[in-house]
Length: 267
Image 1 (cartoon, rainbow, N blue to C red):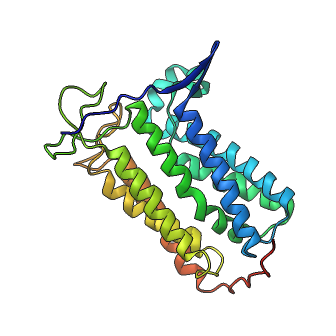
Image 2 (cartoon, helix red, strand yellow):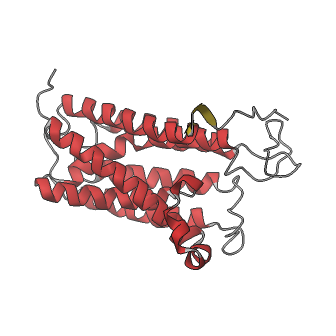
Image 3 (tube, rainbow, N blue to C red):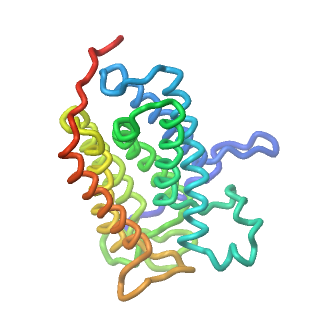
């Protein structure tokens, strides 16, 4: 059994202000996402101006936060928030859904691309390439917070989490950081120049994430207020299954679209 490191969730206190690892994870995810999307722009893979890139990232931030919170409220704890509606706005208390955040990002991106007359699927492809970076930082922050732990295990790398009882559990947050974060990013970055038909990269991301998330859910403890939906199937697996199906359709339908010709790389 490995010892849980018990890292303080707060990095530093500045008077009444507490800077937390979870907030820092979001900041790092957005920052690296911006830089890597800019890298694709310089490679000629994304035909937008620098101002449009900044506006796109701003829209993505709003989409992630609003969609992630709304998704958690609707998918994971609706009865509680139905009885305490004002608590739905208390984002600082935790409770975000990746699937809701993804949906919020897609909607925010669609609205922004429409306002700027940008090709939506081509832009979404480039954003999909960098999403795993944010997932990596987010799952590491979940581990530091001692939340979203795994199911009980007798494997030698099991850990006893502070709020999860006395039995060792899978560090499923680390599994997700490695699979949905690093591995998926490596795949998306490798394929960023090879899948040139609009919608193909977005479809690849959704299919790959769906498969990896369904797999990891077999090691992750379901949220206590939700539990198993039926048999051993979790809410995360159901939502990921829907995501996988949509991604497969995007991959299939992308075959009928003309490939995007990259622009000459810029400095």
